[in-house]
Image 1: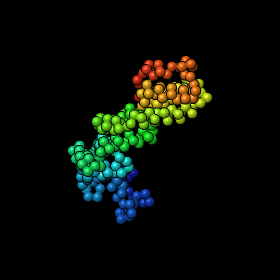
Image 2: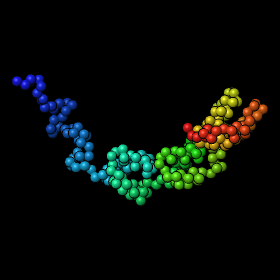
Image 3: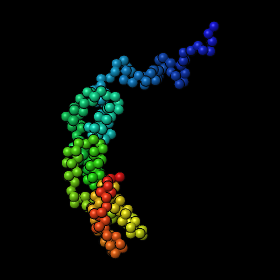
Image 4: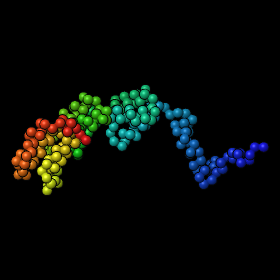
Length: 222
């Protein structure tokens, strides 16, 4: 005879398992069924892609590449994703050139980033090279230098009392992480040091020489 203990007894309704007709009944099955729940049919791929993109764009602007990657992760077929992206671009919901311009404006004035750092960030987000070039080219070199000077002035005030080599290293490193090339970084730091009445050359640190011997990698954003 089969073991009675081995018999499978259907689960009975209870506090954590609502029975037929009770509120919440069938919700667990609906959650597992995903797009098939309700109608018994899979949601149209383009409609799925459209809703996903709209939900993502509600939070903040996204690039075409970011939306394409999100749809790929959610298993949206490539043809459906391409159709939705084309339609969104047509009606202006996707505009990588406008995204790049807004990114440069926001990140330069908000974080003090220079062209090199801004270009790297936009490239990471899949923006086309031409759109990147157009956006960063709109950044006025005078504004870029003024921002670098503000960053150094702030850092200089915070580093008073520390040895001069330490102050210079930190200030140059600050600008390097923001994407400023080494010659610009050392020039701005030298000007700030001189305005404090400090003779860097007299202290054995020729910042003009350092500016042209520093490795280019020092200016990569970190």
